Length: 287
Image 1 (cartoon, one colour):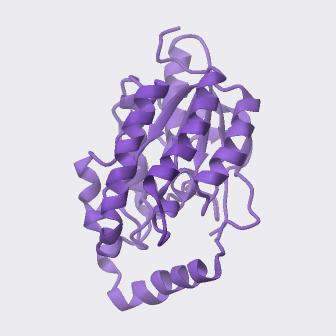
Image 2 (tube, helix red, strand yellow):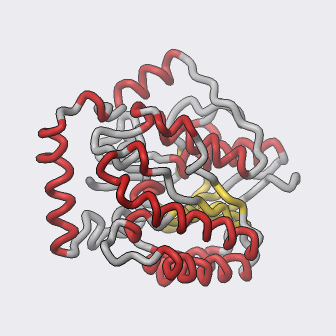
Image 3 (cartoon, rainbow, N blue to C red):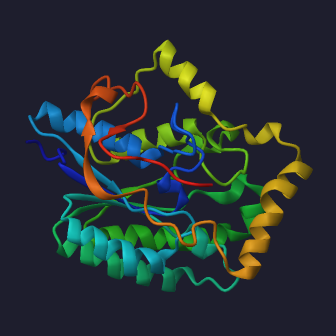
């Protein structure tokens, strides 16, 4: 097997990795997301080497760095993966008293544990918030946190998934109507970026059926949602939850806590994803 071939992949993080706003075609209240899509790509790569991929997604909406380090990482270590992706920190950085250096130090302890267990770590940094007007005040601390991510990756020999530097994410079409989560198009791009970071050649092949499915399940783009509607539907409820220290993910567990084989039938091959990543167990969540 080549150095880019993985056989057990575990995804860690919050709502972005859980896959919110990337609805699975034909499945009510079920989401895919970039990590699930990456699993499909990696499975195609593994099959070229005569193997297959098992995948678990432990991400849960609303989670923070402490949740990942204290809960998700020990769970991941027990699963003995050869690849772990970690995308976390956005919820932490939006807290008024957030210290990006302290948060990075906390995260590094978890990355060290994953590396000590022998896993390759794909460590994502934070999206550049300058194109979301309500997140611009957090740009400075996000930049400091990202600088730490590069240092952690160097010291722990992790691979950086550099989402800050991807200019395509400046396109409003990459974001869902809440202006916080990725749209289906954004998740597809992020999966491709992750594959490239891992050294897995990948270019998506979109047929007519893929385009129709994507359009049928895509959330309303942010530019088409009036500002007052956005405030009422998304912003004010989010602020209320922050004030009450509650999360939409409270009481929820991961959508795929046990590694399951990715079904090859859902894929058109290692260079194309014809539909949702097929798993032998349920993939779903609640909004």
